[in-house]
Amino acid sequence: MRRHRPGFLLALLHAPACLAALLLAAPLAADTFVTSGDKILVFYNFDSGDHVPKGEISGALTGLDTPVALALDLPHRELWVVGLDPAVLVFDMDVMGNVAPLRKIEGAATGLASPRGVLVDLVHDEVFVTDFATNSVRVFARTADGDVAPLRTLAGTLTGFNGPVLGFLDLVHDELVVPNYTAAPRIAFFARTASGDTAPLRTIQGNLTGLGNPRSTIVNLQTDRIIVSEYDQWAVRVYPRTASGNTPFGSELAGALTELQNPYQVVLTDFGEAVIGTDTAVNARVVMHSLTSTGNTAPTLVLSGPATLLASPTGVTSDFARECASGNSVDGCLFRDNFESSLLCYWSGVQGGPGCV
Image (cartoon, rainbow, N blue to C red; front, top):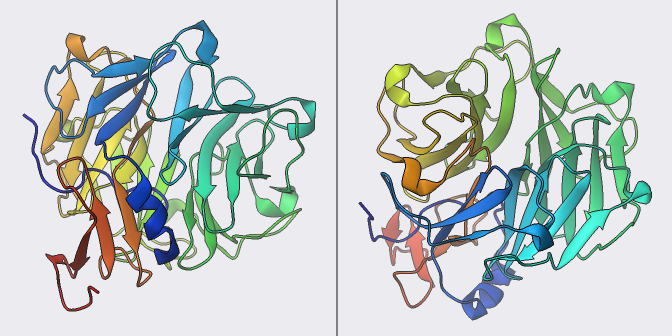
């Protein structure tokens, strides 16, 4: 069943209001992008059940090798991809098929070995790449192409990196959030501009946190909470954004009814839901859960079945665009999706509220 209402997924980037004009000029679409084997499948937002994808990005020209994580640059209509290759691929998000990337960051000068996450910063025109193998975060110019050196690199003993994976760029608080996946599970917070061998501003780490193998983090700026996917524990856990040290999680979503099998990338909807890609080859699925759900709760939407062509869909994102003039995730936000002809302003969740101009 497809639900036609404004918005599907909250883009991982909260861009400033000055980009609204660019978004207005962008073509309307409502697509969800999901990694699957050596492909990127494209679905309509709110597709569910055993639904055939509307298209795919695949073939020799794409250079895709088991893509793992995705990000979108909506004003420039670009899809960013990282996977098993030591490269970052950039595609035209409106073109499907066996197409070559627009740009490719790859080569010895890049320092990339095994990228596991990519974050696009439209405010400062930069791209952050977490590299699992080199225990680093490498920052490139957004328009970088070819064998280019990063603008700066965050790496070294003081960083505490040990298998960094898919993080989050919190432009409201000017922080970079990076989860550690392996032997020392933790969530680390750095200044956005941190470079070199720099210690984090704070960390969530310790036996009380419940962290095991976190794969991705996202900050819900509306509720001031951090949402963490726990890969091996088949759970999604929530912490206060300002949490530090050996802090227990505030709530969790876990259990057989949740259908969370090896949850990986998490993105948020504009109406209080989380959409999660899962790294499972058997009964591969993308699931949607309400952010108010806790415990062993069934999802509100499941995309799964042989017609979907899903196989270990770790990465998920959407071209739903959102602009937040006030710096949080509700007030002054402008929403756009395929079912509306213009940007819509919401204030405290109400269309045309008092803060809209």
